[in-house]
Length: 184
Image (tube, rainbow, N blue to C red):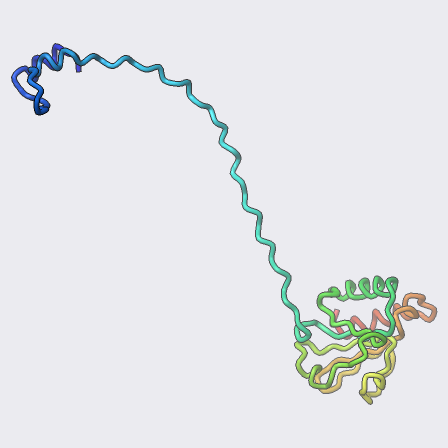
């Protein structure tokens, strides 16, 4: 407020009363000076950072136990080339190593019990070069022919090394048997 206006409005009123101070209101108001305008600091230009997108949570791989696999594969001494070939075979029937329970007879030693097979969600058993007698099963199977027994589909073939060499058209025989087993 400007001093003349304050003198006019508050000429006969006590605005503040301090004990021991006897100045009149108009004399106090006349001593008040207008504050000097303070130069405002220049505006600070800040760049708003681009919104940081939180990384999408990586879904944990599904916990698979022995009972959630699509089917069981038995092999005897699988090497890197044969494992790669098995991966191609699995891909041809729209499967992967994550969906298969792979038993290497030469390393695993213990074979699944009949109880294990009863608890499987899907009931497909492929044997590459491992006779059913080695698996404590007396089921009579013919190579490259699917056989259903007690709700399971069994398929026995030559070992992966023999199939990959394809000397007697084993790849074609395997493909025909897999199409029947997986209804492709």
